[in-house]
Amino acid sequence: MPYIYKGKKKPKTKNQTEKQLLRNKLYNNKKWKRLRESYLMYHPVCEICGSVATDVHHINSPFDDGLSDIERLGRLLDISNNYQSLCSQCHGKLHRKKQIK
Image (cartoon, rainbow, N blue to C red):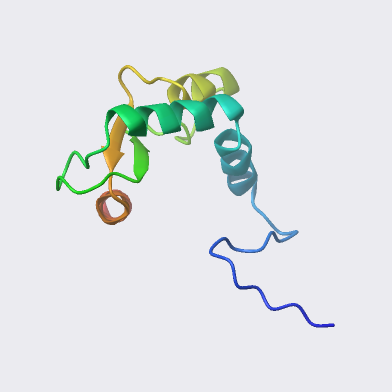
């Protein structure tokens, strides 16, 4: 029987790049998920436009090239200096702006 995918997430493929696998591994970390939920609870407003925040942005990306696994995890979990509450629209704009530079 054919399968029709209707979810928001893309189906997993066998041809994921190393960077995609790393992103999945880090963002599925239980500590990150708890910190993210906690941060959004205490910072519920988008820091750019003032609407309801849905995303937590890392100011210094844990996915920059040349970082060790410990440095990546440190950036991922650095709630004191590295998080920013954003709505999904502002988060998308911010990432598109970074790609252009």
